[in-house]
Length: 262
Image 1 (cartoon, rainbow, N blue to C red):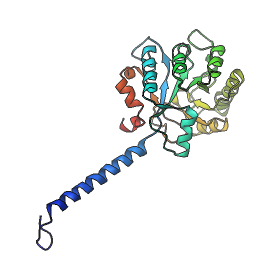
Image 2 (image 1 turned 180 degrees about the vertical axis):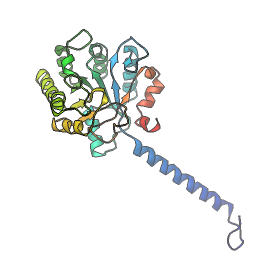
Image 3 (image 1 turned 90 degrees about the vertical axis):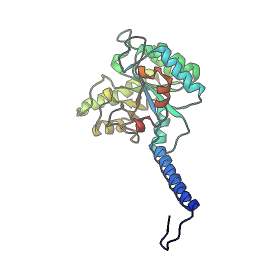
Image 4 (image 1 turned 135 degrees about the horizontal axis):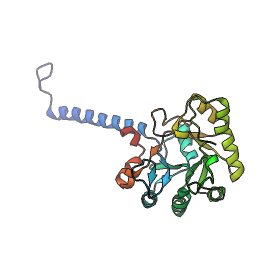
């Protein structure tokens, strides 16, 4: 290729320029991917062998395989509060860091999830709806909740008192659902309750402010568009469902880049 003076540039110089551009693009891509990384907060609901069509159910067998996968592949499974601390400080967490959460207080969490978590020493947070405790065989009772809270493995979080929709709620509802629920859980378990889960993932600015005022260090939502990877009072989670029976899918969901690629 001729230059301005009619001479040809050496071929090696052209290839060197191409190599520099490719290297710069690769570095930019790595920086972009790293900046998109967030600690994946896994969201479970029911651990049962029932309806395979629901997005809120995982079989006991699949859950056991997933926890074994995390354990054998040396994932850094941390408490939800520690994951929130990484996010709040904008710290890059250790590689393969994840947090595990469960919503609603289903008794099958106690029967099938808790023994597996205890076996592998994996911390998790169980979000409890206070008024649902012990109301039917489907929900945990206070003895089961206290046992888990005393284990050193399970943290108990609040999922509200009555599971009210919190968007545009009155001050009294917000006080009841966030404040009263926390106080009752702490009295019944003898443990500090640090995290809140918005019922149905619904929240607004007033609900977030109420969560902070009630003394929670973080609050989680669902994989909704209003949730965030950076706001500790609106944390987005990764829903784990029957599609995660495939461990390749489960691996993708635990990479910390799942939301970015999705």
